[in-house]
Length: 380
Ligand SMILES: [Zn+2]
Image (cartoon, rainbow, N blue to C red; front, side, top):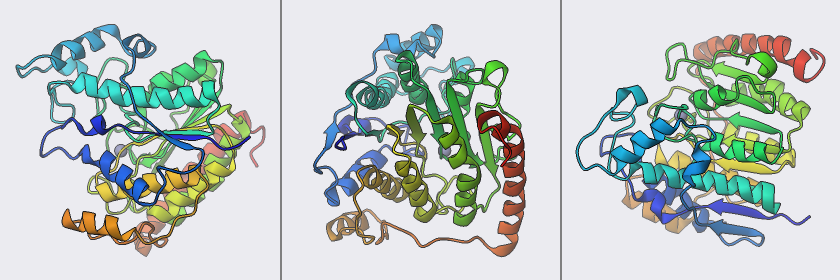
């Protein structure tokens, strides 16, 4: 069957602000789209750019609590300062700003559309740049996330009777998605992230493995600060890839946060485009229908580069490692010094990486002991 892909994008993704000093900058979406277009990846044969539309409220009830949605609806249309900390609304992380609920519904609509194109219309891959709000809980905003687009989209796939792998590459644990499927064996939830020992949201340890019929179907790989490209690829090869292959889902859903990169201002992992591209290529080689969404990333050139790489891999197009000259001119005017799409493989300093390597080897051993017999049928 010929490849058919969709990139979900809307200029309205940018018509919102969390506030001047907030690390989440909505300009990230336009910058990523501009880089994709600079490489000509917005006009490939078989690839389409689709506009996002706000998700229907009815669909949000497949996960979110109606009183939480009602509170957001009310606050979003208010011109007075409002806060309700029971629902996580109104603090520095999840500010209450006029229109925030509509903006969140637009991003969620994009991910739902990506899922619909894949499950109902046979698209090979669909990628919503403005998604991946994996910290939103059933009745609480958290970590810049108001609505959990990943869960709402996966619920559509489950309604269609599909089995799903959700892989979360963001530097932060995908706690909201874990919560949604903790006792469910229809979704294999895998999150690889910076360890919650000292880092938001403080969960995602390797002993969090699911419960009831979902036992074994939640997999967490916590990484210590300074985990680098070789270590990241090792964890992927030794546990993530064999688990995805063994579960053999109907559809692969990925959160493609780029806040794992070594220059991210909020995190301490040391991944680069090298490890990220490697994983994108391995995922594409699985040839599974693929629903993708963006995610974290607080150095905007990292999100632009990462998502351009991801989209090029989804379309099996090789692109030059030097950024297009016109794009370099436009970003240098904005103060970005980047010249290259790709980084060389990066190793952390020896002492740091030895500590991180010991920790990841322990996690790999524990996951192989706990999950492999359940999902693969042996400990090999
Ligand atoms: Zn993150």
